[in-house]
Image (tube, rainbow, N blue to C red; front, top):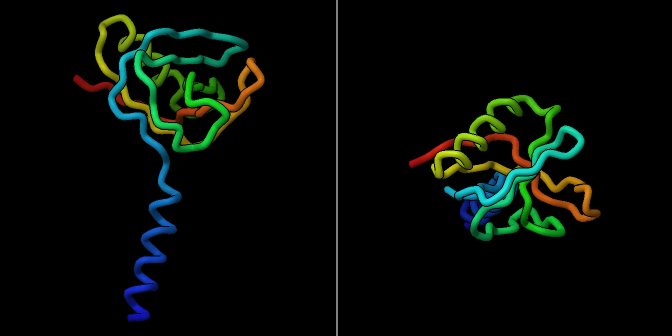
Length: 109
């Protein structure tokens, strides 16, 4: 019984630390401000990081992979292909509210 409870506690602690995923979305709008890229999807996404608001999604130019994520976002926006983002934190936005920040992305059909 103790092993079972211990296993459940380990599972819950690991699953709660897993980064959020947007699922496949289409992009409605892309804005650039002070080097940061802000992306609005056509549909709502879950606010699993508990930011002040779930959108837009922020791409930080100082992050590893920024150029690739931005390129994928532009391809998605231009072609209508769906894109996925993995989110790891809430960060300040120019609008005074925290928003989700992406650290990885991927295109999908």
